[in-house]
Image (cartoon, rainbow, N blue to C red; front, side):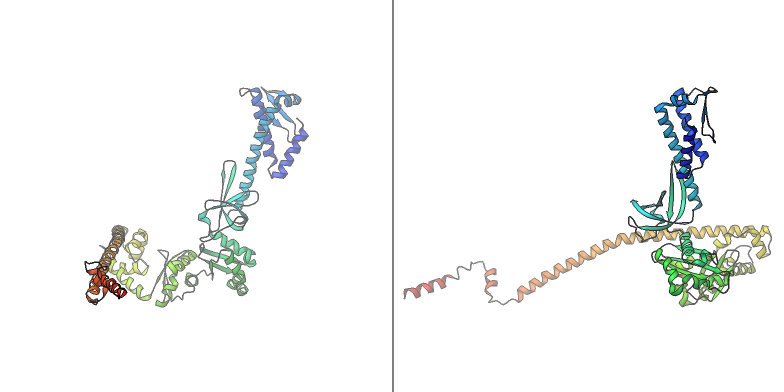
Length: 470
């Protein structure tokens, strides 16, 4: 074997496939070893080593070196083919590992590809060296793709599948919005403006909270752009998805009203122990704050990282009275404890069941032994109320199913009764018409009489005969 030729092959594979030279050397060694074992047999002790500087291979059989010329003759055509297959396999694995490392580093980053084909609802996207898949669950609802269409997505998952690499793409992940902002808004790409939080429901709405270290720059205005030009590019890429840009603030008293825009907030009450925020709004702002199917408050809650409960002031007062009334029924719980719990945002036994004993000790001033029965009572009540709610829900489902079954029967019965009434009315109308008809109508008389109308035509025939005789 020619050492210079080995070095040339290693260098070519290293440059073309971007594979480390040591991996290529190892692949060649394994290929020669496989071919040698096929020639000498599996029981022989065989070792192979390629000099990394000269490229000359050294083959040891039973610790005895084999001459290089004899090595080439021994391998033969069949052994060389085996060595080639082993080498190709190792190179493919090395290439897969290299691509795996590259795409692992790109996880969460945006990539651009061409839609190649479809397997069911899953689109295959050509990314250059490899193909990625865009499953139905990671496609924006209502979006459709055509073969040859350019598409942007983020790398969601990368995993090895045998000798191949599987790259899963996503257009529903929140990182897609983040990366598009970095591409379309230079201040974000340069880290002058920072995206502090992001909440998204793909295909419908996203909320992005931004802040800026430079007080002279309006972070919200910079993201929107002149006449909305910058944000329009992002919206177009996301198939018309609505995007709300809000100003970040470290104070929840300011951030929560910003996150709930465009609704106007009257007051914000923080419940630190439960991680809950109670937001008071006017009656005419209630539906706007909640949003369609609760979307606005749900996204705002994800944006700030706290549970948000929207209420009017009247609803809050009613809830406070009900909660105090329920908590005073707890055995061993004084009136002051019930009021303190409600003041901290504990409105139900379910809320109270998750409180830590030391927190309850701090609130009540009671001992740990006195607080443990209160927590146990709250847990039992929460379980009982949950079971009752589940029972009522099941009963409602049964009643709804019965109504769905009975409605077609009632409609069929009503239709049958209406049809019978129509037939009866038609019959009565026919009888009335027959009674009111004139007596001298020939057709009616002929129809009612048993004699044939030919008998009445005879005198006419006789008359005409007499006229002919005269």
